[in-house]
Structure formats: C-alpha cells, structure tokens
Length: 326
Image (tube, rainbow, N blue to C red; front, side, top):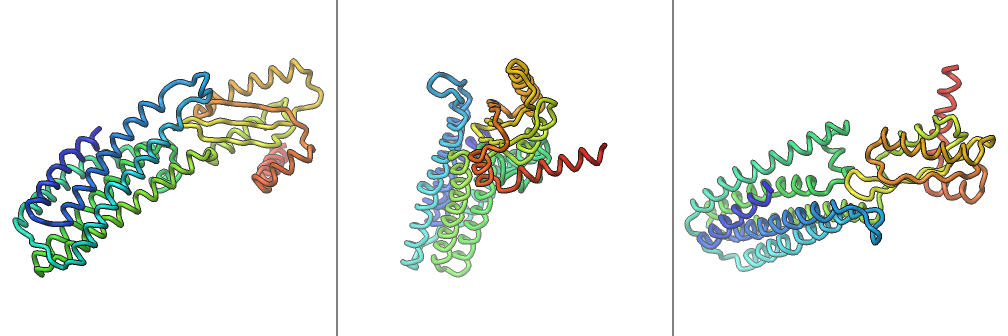
C-alpha cells in the first residue's frame, strides 16, 4: 500500500515535470511510475485472491494465484515502462535535438521523488530483512529462494526506481551542461534497460514457482530426517515437495516400513507422522505417505533420475551417525 501510494504521487509529479521541461528521461521515469503503480495494483490482487481457501475445483487452494498475478505484473513492467522508455530514448538520440526548459523543475521533482521512493524502499528493506532473519538466510539468499513474490517485487521495483531517478538526474544535468539532448535520450534508454532487467528477474522467479518448484533444502532434509527417525520406518525411499503457495508446501514421501507392522500399525504410524510433521514444519500444507518396498526397480530408477545419489547420501550419513552414537 505504501508503494502504491508513493508511485501514484511520484508518477503525477514526473509527468508534469516531463511536460514542462521537455525531458525524455523525465517522461521515461513517468512511464516507470505508471508501470510500478500497475504492478502494485496487481500484487494487491494477488494477495487477495491467493488467500481463498481450498474448494472442490481447487483442492490444493489458490496459493499459486499469487505467482500468476506477480508474473502479469512483471510483464506490465516490461510493456508499460521498459518499452516506452527505450522508444523515447532512441527517438531522442536519433533526432539529437531536444529543447530543455525549466531544468530546476526536474531537479525539484527528482529530489522529492527520491524522498518518497526512498521511504517505500526503506519499508521494503525492513520487510525483506525481517523475513530473511526469521528463515536464517542472508538477504541475497532470501531474494533468490523466497516463495513470496509480493515483497520481493516491491523491493526490486523500489530499488530500480531509485536507480532510475539517479539516471534521470544525470541525463537532465548533462543535457543542461552540454546543450545536447542526446544525453537525455541515453538516460531514457538506460532506464528502459533497467526496467527490462527487473521484469526479466521477476518473470523468471514467478515462472519457476508456477511450474512447480521444490521446497527449500532445509524443509526437505528436515522432513526426511523426521520420517526416517520414526521407529516404524525402515528407510525413506523417496521424498518429493512442491511449493503450492507462499508458506505452503505439498509433501509426498515413499517409505519402506518395518515388515512386521500390521495394517492397523501402518495406518496409525502414518496418521502420527502426519501430525508430527505439521507441528515440526508449519509450511507443510498437504502430506501424503505411501508405503513401498525399497528395492522396487521402478521407484529406485525414478528416484535416481530425480535426485541422483542425494537421498542415498542422506541415508548413509544417518547410518554413520547412528553407529557413532552407539
């Protein structure tokens, strides 16, 4: 909401400054703010729609709506902001002539915009830092693996906004200093490239989550250890996870249970493991446990193709630790 309010106000200021000064860089920045405003509106839509509970049509919930609308937001950044800024920059550079008037208006608007955008950026940084600290990750690592595209999108957009303001100020200043409108066009072009880069990064992130990305290694490893520690379990044969929404993970585990268990023992073990996993790992939303023999050739081939020797290595490390403790 802070980012949305900031972008609406800043966008109006930039548009007025661009029309008054004739600066293509300022007009590019106005397009930048239009793209960011559209993005914030789409992200608010994502937050609202993704929180709907599961129903018959969508038994795993609507969590992935957040990724769909965030992907549309990334496309909006490219189409609305980057395309216009690149076009404006190339057109200005090609003509070589661009009359600049009232440069002080541009400087004033850029300074005020930096103050407003900086406030929104500081809030985004606080949220990213707080969430990364909760997960025990660095900010850079959090931005790479986070399954929440909303905070990440605002952080990237606000960072790009501050860099865009710096580029616009440089373009206006060089135009005023040299009298050549080419510098204004160069600044506009660079703003467009910056926006295209942000759109690409956000698009890649949401594409991965929409396709069905695995949960973080820590969740997978902790779930593996918890199931393997159960007295009824002989070996965890396979474990699969998929992010189905922000802080929502689907877990499927294929387990070789102790052969002496009765059917009733097996049922009780599965129910208990389900409860324990949900308590230990709150992000687990859906849990499926399938009993299988460890030596089934089809299962072993599928696991090797998916994980290589990762699960076997985890099991070997557990066996070594068990022998060492004895």
